[in-house]
Length: 324
Image (cartoon, rainbow, N blue to C red; front, side, top):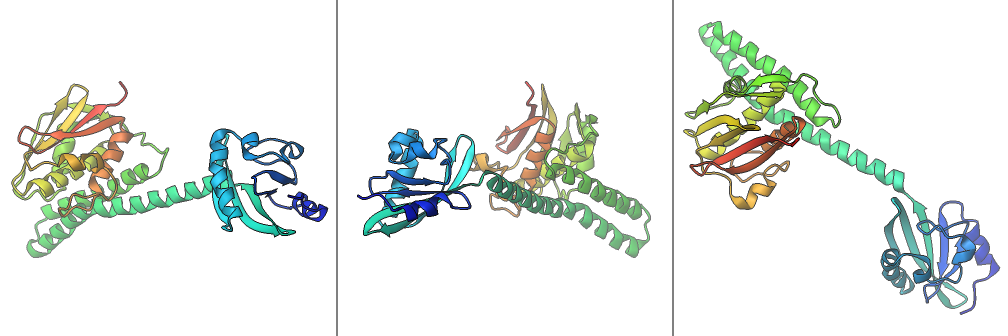
């Protein structure tokens, strides 16, 4: 195969953006320009006439070879190469020069644009999850406020106004607490001793409990009361949604944390690994958001949450310090 003309060399060596390579049907690099090929570090002069095996580590050569052979067979390719912590985007096209088959390869480093795109995608996902969390957790206090307002209009009982005030304060707290959870690196500084009995019983008043009952053995943990209340509210709703209107929910201490369990039908072993995923639901009326909130709050408090079975076969959530 005759080497390409000086005209082709001039074009490649003066490419304004990225690095251009001309390779032949033996996958040898015939021209490289304008300077040094990324993900190799070899000067241009040392690359001309070399094949993939002579230029790159085995892993990189194995990634490149099928793409370059498809290019020579007539199929343009577009792919990324990761090398030494950097990302390079590669575009290839088949060309014919003086009746001989060649491939043209153009590569550009895209590490920063890829990272920016990944950050934007993660930010959009967090915003979407924040919106769904807020919508999910505001439903109960809003329902209570509207119900008590209707009762006050009907009866004039001013006790309803106190319950409306409590519900509105809970909405205000939830907005702050969930905002903290939705923003990475922003942690609540309002942590202190929290009575599990107090926060559990306050949570119970914010949930449509039907004929369900709650039993609490008190203990004290360190945390943010508002966020822990959101954790219990979601666990209680989950227990009633899965376990039925007359389920019993029990809360108590562990040596390094606490548990919440119920007497319902439990959560199948096949779904336990996915139960905390955002949007995952086992099919009852839940939205698949509540247990994601539970997991986020646990993580913010340095707690590891695990799912097991209660003695009656219901769900048992155990929260233990993850610092050990």
